[in-house]
Length: 197
Image (tube, rainbow, N blue to C red; front, side, top):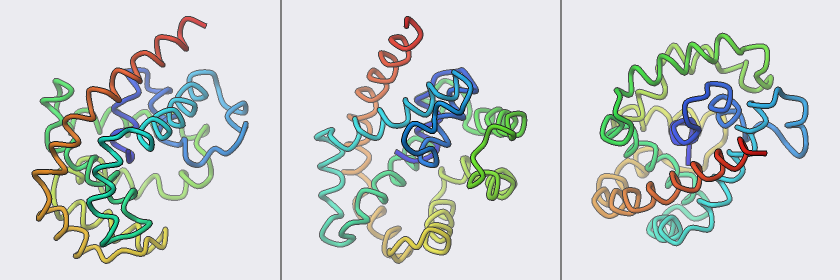
């Protein structure tokens, strides 16, 4: 799962959402340096990644693109799944993607001091380009891929990745729609479990 899905799966607590958003940047037990709700989000991020990596529907989605994209197949699957979530966001969440994104961006600004340095560096660009809303369009996905190629050295041609998405949209979307209820339930259980500790 990519940024949008991680935030979406975090429930309504803004600090848990932000902790989940920055989860990749917090290594080892460094989560102990964060406030409790941020820690919960960081640990939820890890649980989502582990659950996703081992889920048979995600493995099937990754296998569709493995031959063409090799080790980057998982990264592309994450991006494709965020695209499907963005396109159907109102259906999945009951609210508009734009409203959700604006609320989250505001939370990021208010919690700027808690963000890892890596995120502080790209936060303003992320907000000003409305990255979460851009996931809903093919040009937005293309731009996200271009950014990843440029800054994260993703070894994928964005045009090839978009072509693959369009050619396999039906199958990939079906896998996403079957997977989403499972990962949502896992997150609900994890959040309830953590709140009862």
